[in-house]
Image (cartoon, rainbow, N blue to C red; front, side, top):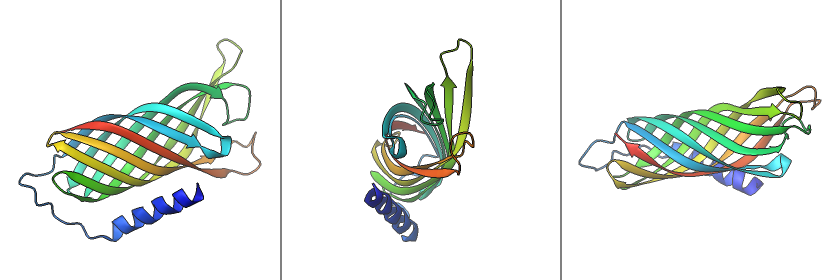
Length: 190
């Protein structure tokens, strides 16, 4: 896992060092992308794999730079690893940030840097009693996109999602958990 983390970090750093090149395309890059995706999240410190679905909106400010927001939902109920209690937990993730790289008319490769949150919705065996907690999250890694047509994009994301766990009732000191996250999806481009 540590090797994967350093590989993703090195790839993202290299992408930032490569000067942006203007695409030789005959048409301008679409400015807005709206997509849906499947996402896999490996919560390393809790030995848990999560599968979820999500949506993403991207605003391409230039061929090489875009701002994006992503919302993911992990519907499986799990033993609540966020509080280490016996309650069930569902998770929601929101990430908002930038992607930077290079693209041609048919493909693009980018680095992504997106702070956000991970929300743990908890419910226990007492009817009507539930609570939730929100933790800071930061996603960085790489993005590969294919453009089969001008208005469709296929996307694969691989990254490290760092989650800060800080519940003082459970942990004596806050800690950061590095977690592999992979997403695949499709987007419509306008």
